[in-house]
Image 1 (cartoon, rainbow, N blue to C red):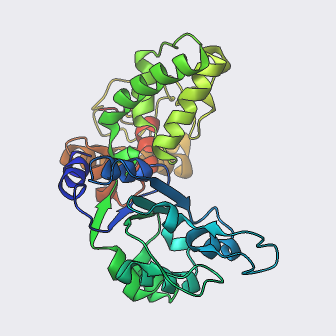
Image 2 (cartoon, rainbow, N blue to C red; image 1 turned 180 degrees about the vertical axis):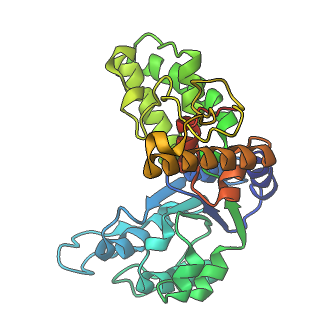
Length: 326
């Protein structure tokens, strides 16, 4: 995020078109607003439109407006978002959802600063700065014929990629402090106290919904209180206190204390049978692989997950199963 902040500071004061990339909930709109706030247009409008939330048949009229009589029910003139954002910034969220027909008109605006509202006889001239965002792979959309190649290159003059929250675990305590304080004041409730175990687990949780999910969890925690079991309702669920001990081959000396989840086996194959013996050996090999990857990655979980070719959430779950922690 320090790199993201540096990029915002570098390109924010310019009028260059920006494409913000990242998963849903990582804070792409916050990046767009930051770009606007440090630009010469900061005192002018910041207009946002979520292209994914707008019905396709209404998107063109929402962006470009229409004249009275343009279609049935158009009993008055309506300015579009581009006109409303004149001299300011327009933020097109989820731009990958725009249909091809509207893409052509958008390209015309970006190139010439001119567009024609529905039913208009003359073009309008606008001066806007465009910031777009998407959680999709636009290049793949281009190859599939779902997104115009010329528009793609016109949009991606400068790309700012916002990393997912699971790759920013050191930020979680700061975000927690902010959300706890903000929502305690907002809802007039006492600020909940989080234990060390709570904080440790919240940092390890993969947060598939990113910052938005974290904020919603804290909002529920503030409103409902700790006794509601808000944290326990997250999926994947919180780990048990200690998994049962695992056995293994009798020839090896234990590398961890007996009863630990990663303790080496002392059971002979004749005592437990082939399938149980193999299952225990597999668990032991799995733990060795985890320890090796984590050591090579210096216990950076995102790096270890890539080394093992598994998802971050799978790595965290496996670490819990084997009693591994950084």
